[in-house]
Image: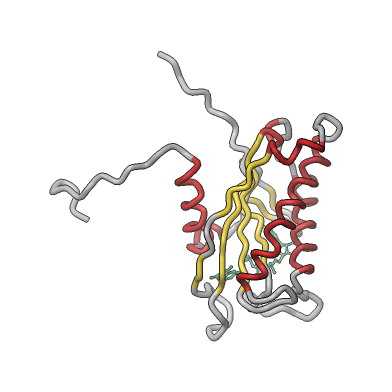
Length: 193
Ligand SMILES: Nc1ncnc2c1ncn2[C@@H]1O[C@H](COP(=O)(O)OP(=O)(O)OP(=O)(O)O)[C@@H](O)[C@H]1O
Ligand SMILES: Nc1nc2c(c(=O)[nH]1)N=C(CO)CN2
C-alpha cells in the first residue's frame, strides 16, 4: 500500500478586521489599501528569514497569498453600539516557508511588522484603548504552522480564534478552495438535517 506523505503544517494564518474609518478611508478601503502592504511585509520578512539562500528577485513567486472574501460581521465583545466590522483572513503558504522551522524570534518580528501596518492605517494606541473597541485596522496573528508560544507580546495560536466566527468562516472559505475537496451529501432519511 502507498501512503500519502504527511507534510509538516507550515501555513501562516492572519485575521484582518476594521470597523471605523482611518486615514486610508472606510474599513473596506483601508483593508483593500493595506492588502499589498501586508503581502510586501510578509515577503520581506520571509526573505530576511531565508537569506542568503533565496534569490530575492524571484522570491515573491514562491509564496502564495490566499485571501478570503470580505465579510461584514457583528462586533463580538466590546461596546454594544460600535459599528459592524469588515473582516477577512489571509493564508500564506509556499516553498519559501519549507526551509524555515516556525520559531518565536521570527514570529515576534512579524508581529512587530503587523503593529507597524496598523499604525500606517491610522490606528492610535497611545490613548488607552477600549477593550475590543472600534479600530481602523486590526491584524491578528492566528497561527504559524504548529508553533505554540505564550509570551508577553505574542501568543500563538491566537488564544481566542476558535471562538470567533469572524475568523473561522473566512478561514473555511480559503481552506475549502485549497485543501482536499469536500462534497456535501444530499439530505437522506438516515441523516435528517
Ligand atoms: N496572536 C496575536 N495576534 C495579535 N496580537 C497579539 C497576539 N498575541 C499577543 N498579542 C498582543 O496583543 C496586543 C493587543 O492587541 P490588540 O489590541 O489588537 O488586541 P485585540 O485585537 O483588541 O484583542 P484580541 O487579542 O482578543 O484579538 C498586541 O500589542 C500584541 O502584542
Ligand atoms: N466582528 C468582529 N468582532 C471583533 C473583532 C473583529 O475583527 N470582528 N475583533 C476583536 C478584537 O480582535 C473583537 N471583536
